[in-house]
Length: 277
Image 1 (cartoon, rainbow, N blue to C red):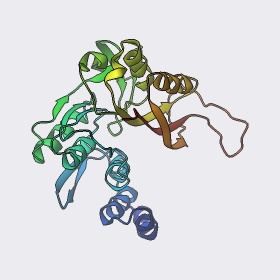
Image 2: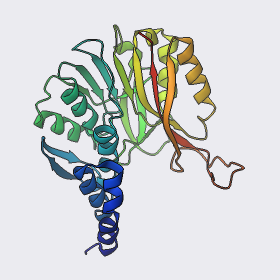
Image 3: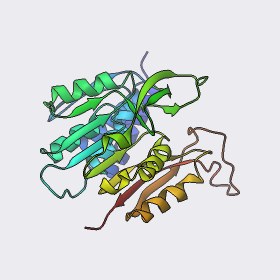
Image 4: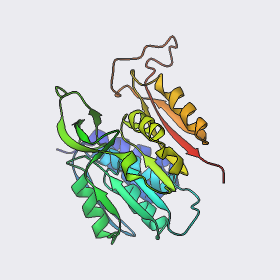
């Protein structure tokens, strides 16, 4: 059945998509997002080759952030920077890192059973054979977690055995850091507070030179943001936030606010941390 409303929104949105990106591929992906149903795998062919995806809407958002906005770009201190990509999704970030920094030593962690095979296929297709990939979550210990997987953005993790979701292995990220890390990219759907606390407690935070990623401040995590930033400052980092937006889909109950324009205080923020050279 033809999605007439979706086609109409896609066509009407072309000027807005172009104004936002000045990128023809983003325009096409944004139109595709309006037309196609959620959580249906597909593929898109760029000038540099084909990329498989799990969900058109998630793919469009990732492409805009990574390729158009270049949110993960950084200035490496050597031709072979060490990059830890926590929350690799379908491999788009790792592929961008390898195209931008060909000599980079990259390790990608992605626990999603639906996403990891796509990640592997995308990296293999583009010749990224020297990128290490592990189908695990990152945590503060070696254990198993429940992944509330939505087959698109990876889902949230929980230690509660009664949680709905699939069981995935988790590794202690601090154990994987034994030397300088030029960039820690972290997008792990709320687990970042646990992981960063462990990196500080174990002293492994001292090996990390720069960080970029998302904070997922659900109702149980909002008060942890100040603690996280203070711990980074105490360990020699400067920090900033590029953007923050309310997200009602985050875990926990609605975080009511006294502001009519902000009905829910839960939010996602893109943050950066770095040590001055």
